[in-house]
Image (cartoon, rainbow, N blue to C red):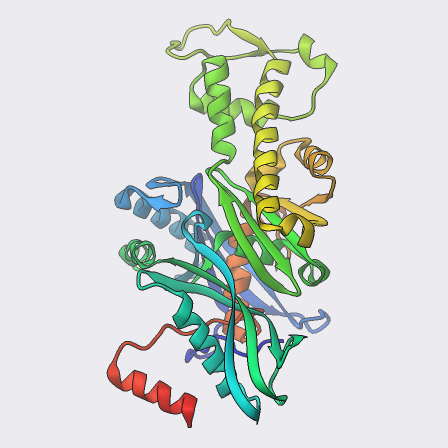
Length: 426
């Protein structure tokens, strides 16, 4: 149960926009809230516009060419606006998991046998935040995992209860302030405002997990172009975030090096023939491969399909083993990895789900965006899981039903600090 949700002073909003800024692509999606009385929730998000462009100007989650990234964003937004017939003014965007810091800690506050109210909880969370965050970091997500009163653990909502000491276990996700300012500046140059930041794997989880998976525990692995991100969920809350700097681009690079072909051709071969499933028939099937530096003349060089499969399989197997070692190092392999969801563009390689299930000894399924209807390509393609999650986050956050607790930034002006102190202590 939520205790705090992000407040907004805006009037009723029916249009939401999301911008997924990745290593390989920039995707903008626009959705409209649609009333459906026969649905369980009563309302759904219908996609009305989508645009995506090859990503430029970003590498390893960091902006390396502001103008190139700005052009990619403008083109993606323009395509989405044209399709939707709407002009947007703000977007919810993702932050790369490779740049964020994820930590879990406990915070305590004395309540002197008083009845717990929102002021006590706010003070508890504020104390915890101030003790953990450094000056150059900014909070992206602050999610209470569970509360305890006088040693009684597993409390989801302590309000109305009486005790001497109130404690909370918090999962805090922070990002460098400089990184956030750079993204804000880039979005501002595109004449847009940022309505919210969401760490990439969290957004992917929101769009691919069903309610039971969120509650009972699951791990979402988003295999993107430049990075693979990890998000673990338990009791409806994000409890762990991680990433490794390997993605589909590394598979493409391995193919290009292994058979001496341009990167563009390597990407084409991966899309057309890439698989991790070994077959005896592959030895007899040849593929025509353009060579580096080859002119537009006849292409005579051929390789067996089995060679391509071995190159792809070796890199994917290495990636899966690295993912599991990261999960094991944090204990997530024992806590929430009975159910694993693979999503992202890299998860579409034939046979990767079966390979992961065999290597990890766990149930593995492919995750597709859920909760957003319309535009079948978008709604069923794992490549758009993050963008769909950003739409859902923005909608739920606005509606006050987000299954997170967003802590406000610390006040900077003297009068704000005085007002906050008076509110929390009187």
